[in-house]
Length: 99
Image 1 (cartoon, one colour):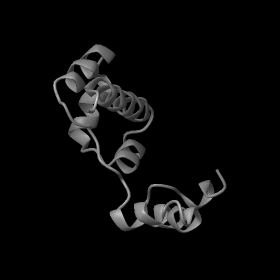
Image 2 (tube, rainbow, N blue to C red):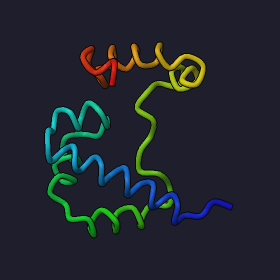
Image 3 (cartoon, one colour):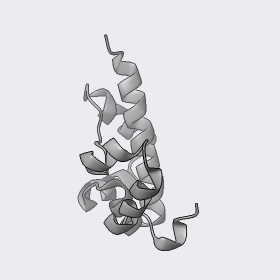
Image 4 (tube, rainbow, N blue to C red):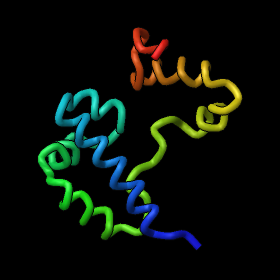
């Protein structure tokens, strides 16, 4: 059986990180997370307790993979190809390929 506390914690970590990115640069936050601007605006200004309360109210993950299914399937076999695809999707820039 799935422990909902683990799902809530994973959602919290994701949203806390999205919050940090949004506080730094909203455009980057939207590109990296795929979250809508109105939600990112709320998240940017939300306190950590509000985020924790939001994730406790939902018994599933609050996010989904950013890469399409076919790229996720290839991730372990060919990370370089997935990295190149991430550049095309705008998730990474050419300059960050060596990161």
